[in-house]
Length: 570
Image 1 (cartoon, rainbow, N blue to C red):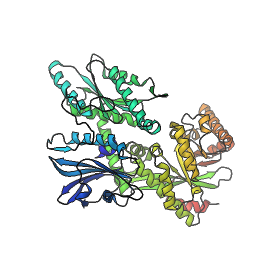
Image 2: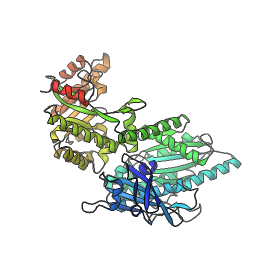
Image 3: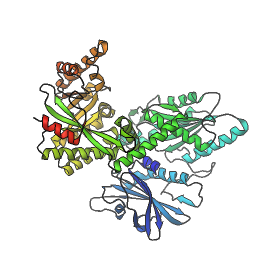
Image 4: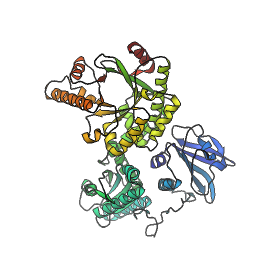
């Protein structure tokens, strides 16, 4: 179910088993508890179906998840023979539009179900309309409708064939998982037709990169499997040839599109003598490569298994933490340099694990972003921060705007602006009290989309801050177009302001340059991570406007932050 949630990028997946006239919840993943028992009619189906909410028509199926604002719900029936025995239910708050747009990800889920229950011949996930069910090798079907490549089931069969061959003739081969980086952005910016065109080009290049007898399959929406036979070259060399296929840009109509890929691979027999194990180990390597960011390659090694187990445990514990309210917000004050007056605060999420104690955001935020947990986590942070700011205002505390961090995953969602608007209405927060912080890399990743989305947010009256400024590659021409209010000098520069030698010279030059740029663009400049009086003095000399850091206060729990704000308010 966790994999199904990742394939479709939804927060809730539940399994129901039919017992008489009732359907009982067998298991689920997600931050919301679905209904334990529902009438069987709500999960009864002869084939997969999708229900999408509208303002005046809420399908009865949504009672499975009452109490939450879900935009769509999919029911995939499971049967033994001709009798339905249960159903897999997927739900999301994001509006995916028409049901047809969900065909491909739901087809992937169906294939996952088939693989999971492959040994039970009398059980199957029923066919999606128009979907092709894999047939034995050599048949006419079993090919992806977009790329013409074999479907994922054939990759396992090919690995098993090569293992049997190696037992007689010897030799080795490499199982390679290739994932296109940021592929969703193509569909969002240019449409699904562009995405399909890119997929076909990737498929053709992967086919051409190999030698005769190599095998290429489409694994899921943006993933491919390549099985390359060893012809005297190392696994690394074979994979290097696949990576080179992304060196040249791809094209769609008049667009030239640069794409990169993340790759993980495993070698037979060094990394496993069983096809399933090889596939799993290549997946583990891919997961590790994704943790390092896009455009990376990782070869499997045994130590990765422990890392994957730890990451899987953290993912599970983080979902539990969100459900059981183990998370909290701390608040770090901001001060104007000139008079050291309080001018706002930043809300920072903290996690106190019941067994392991405090866990650094540097550890759990990347996991949340990779697994999609960042969406409900970010929504909770924004809502809790707005509620707290409203409470302080009602108590007469004047502490300036409260800033909340926004991840790249959240910002990319089509419903992000509407979700912010909804939280503002629910919490009755004044727009001027809220500031959203986005990193420079998020803003510059897709400038046109960023301009449009930030403009919508600014129309709501919200302040916008560019965090970690100076660590990326901002174009001044683009920066002048961005509707933002604050530039934050990254702490990596601030910590060197009082350093000796070239480091100190460079850090002070950057502080002066960013401050000058802010003044030229009529933006406020704030430095984070200020810990010494000398750093504060250097920032004042550079004409920086405001600061935050341990020199004034560490991030404080709500009660301590309230006392601090009362003592330092204007």
